[in-house]
Image 1: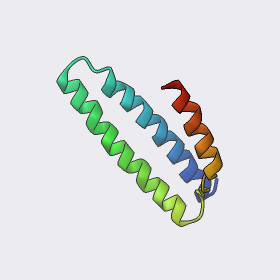
Image 2: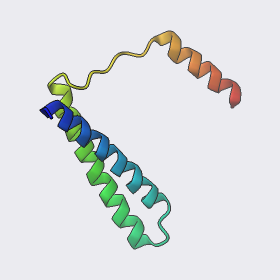
Image 3: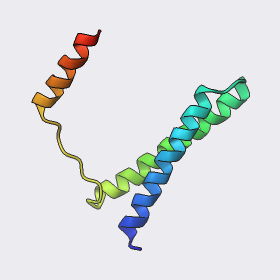
Image 4: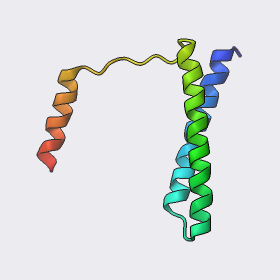
Length: 82
């Protein structure tokens, strides 16, 4: 397993953890539980960003610019719902 594959696995795992902590935060029944999940979520989001930044710097996570016409199409689609 190469470094890129390891980083991809770390990123995917961290994203999954963020999702779990988000739901824990939303569904907390007490302030203490809410605060604990919220802090864990914030820490995990920072970790996810660090992993993403390292991958991006190495060219292992590339993004592409969204096409303006596609953005407008989606915007129009949801504007009709409102």
